Length: 217
Image (cartoon, rainbow, N blue to C red; front, side, top):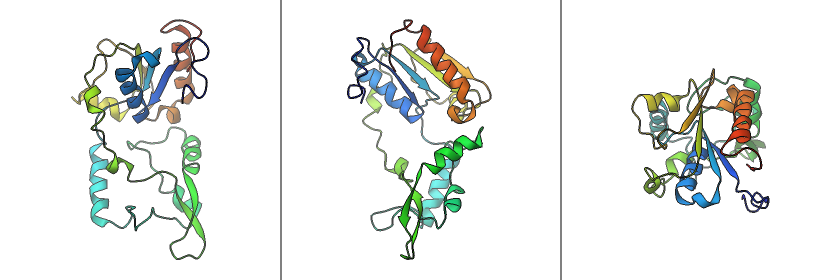
């Protein structure tokens, strides 16, 4: 994608930025193909599984079965947009610092779909609600613990569950002495809680690190 959008045409390698699971992909790219990037900025990125309460909810849902999409059971279709928006949740669970941003994301996560009884159209998710149950991370595991030569910064929310779990002993595979920047009054979804602070931090990093000016991201 970076090549297709011309990020290598300016003579400098791009800086890659990723949040959460996307940050994990930037980390793995830095471990496997460091020659492709000048630096990496990870935003509230962890390497563990989902929070315990999310696992418990999935197990409960699996027992109930009724809302889990399969080849013969498509994603649930809600009769109204309001009903669908009411079911939107952030993961890991957290309050939305700016509800209008969460609402913006939720509305663009939905699409029209035929109602099961064929009486008209309702709303269903653009994403697969069971993606995490299907995701196979085994191909990523060999890169954990690899020596990272790419300059790397981690920006995280002061109240993030990701950081909370790391402080409680969950393994971290970040390079030693890696620069970390805390964004106050924010949870895992910093772009919802403190969007301007996040943008300001990223702009400051790009302006001064790893070398001032000329980098694309």
